[in-house]
Image 1 (spheres, rainbow, N blue to C red):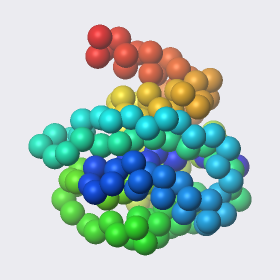
Image 2 (image 1 turned 135 degrees about the vertical axis):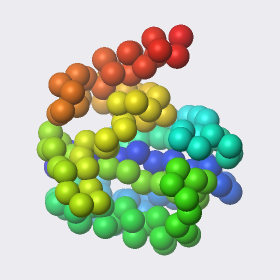
Image 3 (image 1 turned 180 degrees about the vertical axis):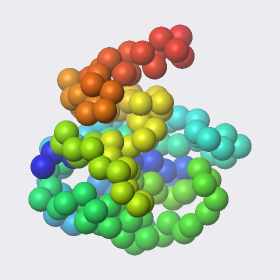
Length: 154
């Protein structure tokens, strides 16, 4: 299944953290098929913290959504992420953005990511690697959503 994962870091070596996460995703068996550039962005939600480096990857996996989430959380722990306040600073953050055209709403897992269409730091790098992919709930392409976000910022 083709999946899209958001990667972000705003502590320590932010670029290195993102690259290490990509490597650990590969070690966990995900085949990375595309990778966006890295973008420095201001924090979202709680803005009084260091800027983030954000990127997205496209990957192929046979893992079902809940197992993929477990792998992502295990990588975060392996890299040294510790629980903090909601939207607080973090060494690494890995989010399932899209899982094929699947819509999932269960305890602790919502796909597509519930805030992705509101976040430039997700849409901008995702547009770079998947502009024609359609959000399965909003029925708009990533390119359309990012273009709409660009107009709001302009």
